[in-house]
Image (cartoon, rainbow, N blue to C red):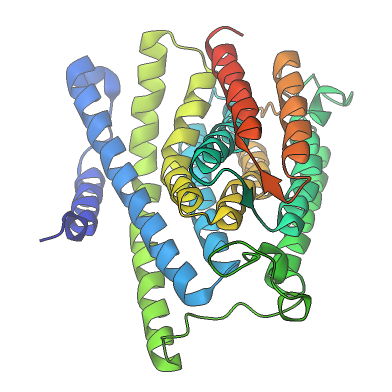
Length: 378
C-alpha cells in the first residue's frame, strides 16, 4: 500500500476528531501535549498540502499551461487566506499578521525559491531559458500591487501610519481585485501563450505562428472522454485535500499563537511560519521543475504565487478587518520597505533577459538571508 493512499483517511480522521473534541485551550493542555498536538496538525496540513500539489500537477498535465500552475497557485492562496483568517478570528490582537504573511511570501518565493531554483538550474544546466513575456507580465502586476498594499499605507494621512480607512480599504480592495482579474483574464485568454513553455522539453522558442495565441491543449494520449473523467476526479481529490487544511487551520492557529507568545519570539515569525506552511509544497514543485529544465513552469509557480498572494490576500485581510472591527496594519517597516524595493528591482533585472545563470540565484539567496536576519533582529 502506498503511503499516499493513507493521506485522505488520516486528514479526515483528524478533522473528525477536531470537530468532536472540545475547544482547544493551549494553556490547559500544557507545553508537552500542546507541542505534540501542534506537530500532528502541522504534519497533517503539510501532508494534505502535498496532496494539493500532486492533484494540481495532474491537472496541469491534463489541461496544459497556464491552467495547471494557475490551479495550484489559487489552491495554495486559498489555504493561506484560511490560515490568516483563522488566526485573525481566533485572536483579536494580530493587526500585522496579514502584512507579515504577505511580505514573508514575497521574500520566500521571490528570493528564497527563485534564488535556490536559479542556483540549482545553473549548476545543472549552466543556463536556462524561459518565456520572457510571462515573467514580465507577472512582474507588471506584482510591483504595483506590492507597493499599493505594503508601502502606500505608510504615506497616507487619513489614518495612523501603516493603516487604511474603511473607504480606502474598500476602494483599494476593489482596485486590487480588478487588476488581478484583468491579469487572470489575459493569462487564461488572449495572452495565455505568454505563460507556456517556449519549447516542448528544451525551452527553445516556439514558432511565432504557433505560439502567439495557441490554446492550451490536453496531453495528446488522452481522448476527450477519458480526459474529462480524469479531470473531474482530480478536481474532487484537490478539494478533498484542501478542505482538511481549511478546517484544521483554526486549531493550528491557536497553538501557533500560544507557542510564539510562550517563546517570546518576534511577532513577525507567525507570518513567516504560515507562509512556510503554505508554500513549502509549491516551492518543492517549482524546484523539481527547475531540475527538469522546465524553468517557465517554475517561474509561473513562483511569480504567480507572489501575484495571487497580493491580489487575493489583501482584499481578504481588509474585509476581515472591516467586518470584525480589527485594526489591520499593512505598511512595512522602513527596513522592510527597502528590502522589498531591492527585491522588486532585482527580480526585474533577473527576468529582463531570456536566460538565467548562477549569479542571479546567488544574489536572490543573499537577499533572502537578509530577510531572515531582519525577522529576528529588526
